[in-house]
Length: 108
Image 1 (cartoon, helix red, strand yellow):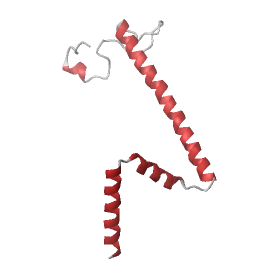
Image 2 (tube, helix red, strand yellow):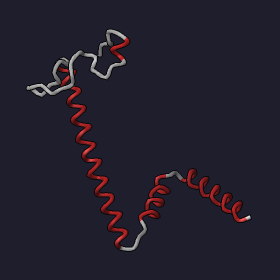
Image 3 (cartoon, one colour):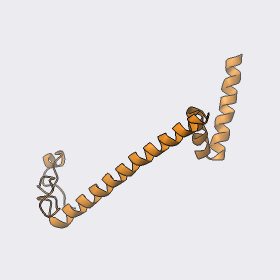
Image 4 (cartoon, one colour):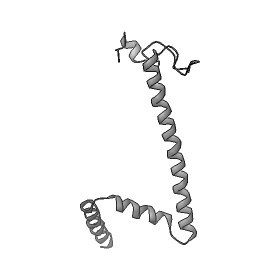
């Protein structure tokens, strides 16, 4: 990638290649130089697809929590269990020890 011609250009939100980021008639970013514009468009489209998948997964997860709640489980506690399951054993043991120490300190 070629560097910007001036420091003022580097501070701009406009692309360094001098063009605007608009889609041209052949699916390229107008003024962004063929291959680089096509590459930018490809990255953008991939990210958009992944963001859509992420939203869909989020909806699926909400549905599973709602289903679990409907059968009597508490989603808040389930989230805590999942958080604990993600931790490695040493980190979990350390947190359990600190929780025990703090709990005993509050009872005094």
